[in-house]
Every structure is written in structure tokens, then in C-alpha cells.
Amino acid sequence: MDPSAKFYTNFFLWLYDFIVLAISNTFAWHCPTSSVLLPFYQQHLGDNAHLEIGVGTGYYPAASVARLSQVQAVTLLDLNPNTLAYSQRRLLKAGYKGDIQTVERSVFDPLPETMHGKYDSAALFYVFHCLPGSFPTKAIHVFGNIVPALAPGGVIYGSTVLGKGVPHNWLGRQLMAFYNSKGVFGNTQDTQDGLRKALEEMFEEWDLRVVGAIAIFTARTPKV
Image 1 (cartoon, helix red, strand yellow):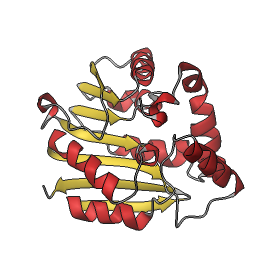
Image 2 (cartoon, one colour; image 1 turned 45 degrees about the vertical axis):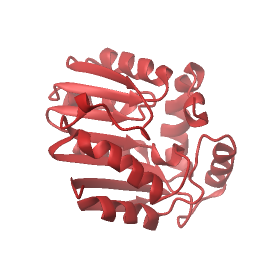
Image 3 (tube, rainbow, N blue to C red; image 1 turned 30 degrees about the vertical axis):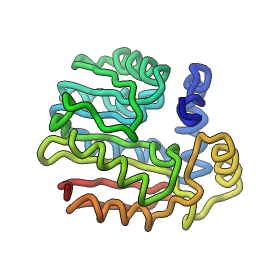
Image 4 (tube, rainbow, N blue to C red; image 1 turned 180 degrees about the horizontal axis):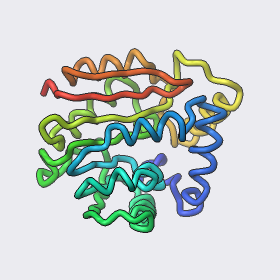
């Protein structure tokens, strides 16, 4: 299993929300979860079927269950069976009544044809910075795999920690060095301009902004 996936043991998942969503997002990346990332996530949720890629602890869909209750089906896709099981349990515990499918798969691999043309929304929250390689190449590869899964008018949206071209404070630099040394991050060369190039190449409509050290993006109308 890829190092970025192996890092997510059940013990780390138990700590994840506090370490990443509370501490790191606020004090290292200066992009708070509650005031920036969660509202952004909820704003772009689809109406019929949603694809959650790189599921983590399932925080975002579970925290959005009131909005998600209008969505008939959710697919959780991740390389790590621990995160899939953890997120599915959390979503059920939060009260989601729709259909939940789990897919153990790398985002670098093409999606099964059974998933094509199905999803109104596909979320990539904190996925790109965990992938090896750099922008625009790795983003183009991933977008190319996800695009076939979109329903007409569907949106891909997400967020990622940038490695270059953004201000990193002391805590951010320490986390960047540690996570990259362990293979959990692969973002030392990731820039806003590189992500922009990938979006421009793959989509007719897109939006990209940076909050603190985090790039936040949406993409619609694929060119391919």
C-alpha cells in the first residue's frame, strides 16, 4: 500500500479530526475547517449521487448529513480499507439513510465503467497533496480518471495544501517536512500555477483560489 495510505491506521484516524481539521487547518495552513472548508464542501454537494475520494475519517459527509440526506447515493473511494470502514460507520452513525458504496481503489487507476456518468459531485479534499509527483501532471492524471464518472453538469471540487508559492509559518514548515519525509505528503513542488494549468487543460469552467496555504478549486464541463 502507498505510504500516504498506510499512515491512516485506526489509531491515527481516531486522532485525525483534532490534529488535521482542528489544529493544522487553523494554525498551520490558516484555512479553518468550520468557516472555510466545510461550507465550501456543502455548497457543491450534488443532488442525486456523490463521490467522496480520499475519505479520511468521513468528517465532511458526516457533518453535512442534513444536506446529504437529499442525495440518494454516496460512494466512498479510497486505497485504505481502514478509512473506508471508518467513514462508512461514521456516515451511518450521523444518520445518512441513502445507499453507501465503498470502493477500494487508487485514484491513479481508471474508475470502473459501472461508475461512469453517475455522479453530480465528486470531492477531492486533501487528496492531491498526498499523491506523489507534482502539478500539473498528477492533477491531469487524476482528473482524467474522475471525469468519466461525472453526470452531465457534474462538478469536481476539492482542496489541497500547496508546497510552494504560499506562506508557510513555522508549524506549517515542520509539518510539511515531516509528512513529506514519511511519504504521507508529496507536495513540495505543488504550486497554484501548476494546479491552474491542470484545470485549464481539462475543463471549460473552473475556479481556483487560495486561502492561507490551501488551494480550493471547482471544475465543470470537461474538455475530454
